[in-house]
Each structure stands twice: as structure tokens, then as C-alpha cells.
Amino acid sequence: MSDVDASPGDGRDESENERLDRNWNEMLQELRVIQTGTQILTGFLLAAAFQSRFEDLDDYQRAVYLCLVVASILTTVFGLAPVSLHRALFRMRAKDRIVHLTDRILQFTMIGVAITLAGTALLIFDFVLGRVAGIVVGAVVLVIVLALWVVLPRVSRRSLPLESP
Image (cartoon, rainbow, N blue to C red; front, side, top):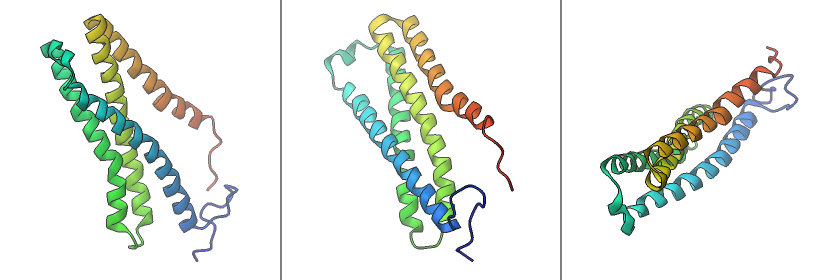
């Protein structure tokens, strides 16, 4: 019965396996974007410690920096985890599990990206303009990320018609 439409009425006419393959491919595209960004940001953060002005950081800035390095590395690890998962479950007829777990992993990866972006803005503005500017800009970045990545999708989702059973 693998030829049965996985979700009748959605306009796709695809089997469950085709739907899972499409979902997996869409997630891979998202992962490619996230991996590139997190790896570049991680590289930037790691290289910053070897710059001559790094000595000018105060204790607070060093603590923020170290937290950002950990967040960025963990975000990179989360972004690469679906590859390992896919390798471990390859040809085991577990595509549904891979897609489900990758969806969860991507959510944690996005949280890590949000924290790293806001924290990086905080650190840079704190270093260049002062503590208040750093906190304000970091908070503004976090609010913008939350608005675009959490609020906008939820509002958009509510405006869609409910799926028929």
C-alpha cells in the first residue's frame, strides 16, 4: 500500500515514502544554510582569541566570549548531527524516524544560532561602545530573531486553513 496518497487533499499525490523523501530533502537544504553560517561564526569566534585586542577584554566580556564559543560549537554539533543520524540509520527503513528527529534537532540548532547571534552582537557592541550599548543591541537582535523565527511563523500558521482529516 505504499502507493496510497500520504495526505489526500493536500494537492501533492505522493506516497508516504515520497513525502518523507521530500521532507528530508527540504531539511537538508535548511541544514546547508545553517551549517555554513554556524561554521563561519564559530571560526570567527575562535580566531578572535588570537587577535591582539583580545587582551583588552574585561572579565565580563571574556565570560560572554567563552559562553559564545561554547554555544557556537554546540550549535555546529547540532547542525551536523542529522548527518550522523542518517549515516547510522541508512538503509534501515527509518526515514520517518530520521525526519522526525532531524526536525527536533533543527529546532535546537535554531535556538543555538539565535543565542550566538544575539550574544555576538552583545559582545561586539559592549567592546566598542560600552556595556549598556552591548546589552541593548544584544536584546534587540534577540527580539528581532524571536519575532521573525517564532512569532511570524506562528501567526502565519494560524492564518492558514485547518487541514482536513
